[in-house]
Length: 401
Image: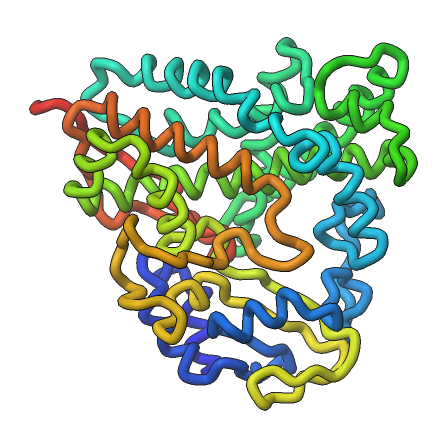
């Protein structure tokens, strides 16, 4: 079984890891050579994600990981209750229901205009890279608008997020040191700029999320500036990678299933269940690399000792045949589709409503406006990461040329 996990992490498996996930599911909870545990079946993953005895704080591992970014505040996805719960409540007061239920709907016009503008730039081009030309610029533009980033600063945010995400896949054996250094600088510069914007918001409040968080004195008190910066980075970076992969995986899947692409052109409402099926069938986040056990826990008759690292194979769970009928078939009409694409439990993806709506509008408009699109290369080249899985390029031709 350790050999199967190694093969999943090998780049050669990136185009189709799903047969390897099927191998993993033969042993729902598998002890690895380093003492960690891999969980690969739906029910067990769901149970663990909702288990209060599991920690998202690296300090609870028996061999703690080094803190990120030289001691900078962590976002609440790396915290446990009650600290996590307070910060998430403070953030969601201004991001979604129940206090701000209309935020995503209020972005409809901006999303439609932004997506339309990006597709306008593709008109008349025979060859397109859906990733570079469309999926990459979209989430940063949307999140900058959400946060209230001044328009003159937005180009720098695009550069910082690009350099930061490039550095995630840094391999010291094959990549130039400059790639890592650019990522380090991007993290530092992004954090400083966000801190400056928060400080400016105290003096001159505005309409963006940064300003609302900086000036809110709700029932849980005010969020500290460092936590506002960490929350903004979470939306920018995690939201970027998730949405880019979801759009790219979605367009790839539609091009592989042309009858579904035709249906989407004729039935725009299909996009809602279609995106849910994409989150199950080709999820942008495939693995949660670790959780820590607060105490000894039992999962599928296996005792996992306190402090053990636990790896959750979300993409495997969402193709578990004990939970989903014919799980390797892409079926946008699938019912009872309670996938693990955005996780589960208290750490359910914070930005999921916005990522869903971005992807719904993006795929609908791409399907409607691209001229007879077809893949140039299948499978496309993939990013090295097995955790955040998606094509690094998705090159297509359009028209009859």
